[in-house]
Length: 226
Image 1 (cartoon, rainbow, N blue to C red):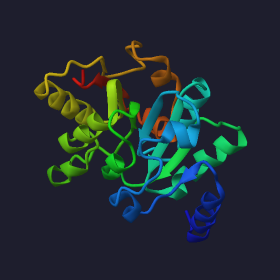
Image 2 (tube, rainbow, N blue to C red; image 1 turned 45 degrees about the horizontal axis):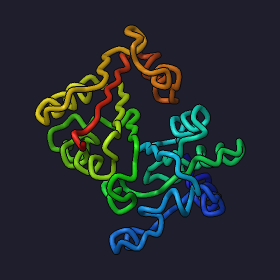
Image 3 (cartoon, rainbow, N blue to C red; image 1 turned 90 degrees about the vertical axis):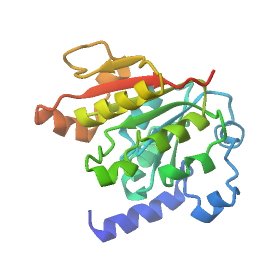
């Protein structure tokens, strides 16, 4: 993407009512007004909040929102030029249960209150296979601890990936935490026991992975929050 296109998207994001871009300072100083108040101040309802972390173009966020109008969806990514597409689509299709948030995932505890989130989706995150990159894996113990804090007692984490490594790595961590997965499927199109929205929503990258004959896996689990 050229720099002119990026700049155009950044400017357009500024005009979107469904894009929120807090400063790092605002978050670190606990001055973000929506923390603990997403339902009251933004969505103006009491519906569950579902978050897609590393949402990219927002394809999953948008498609989930279309399927479930009584659920609020928040797509989170640090790259605003990417989720511009999702925000624009949501506006064009009058989806009032969608918002995109530009921030780093490691700051989500500054964005959401304890127990504020019902579900977290991780769709095709970078597996960060190299050992020295493990701190960036979105299912490493540090991130899992963050997810646990912001989720309610019945909250579910969904991981959809083309990486058998990341799937297995996450399973190992869950075993160490005495968590039994709700669903662990190593090939969702061969073993059709994954939820409908896992099988029937496909991102741009998933289509590429499928053309390369990569297996797509799915893992879901609940923390022991009760």
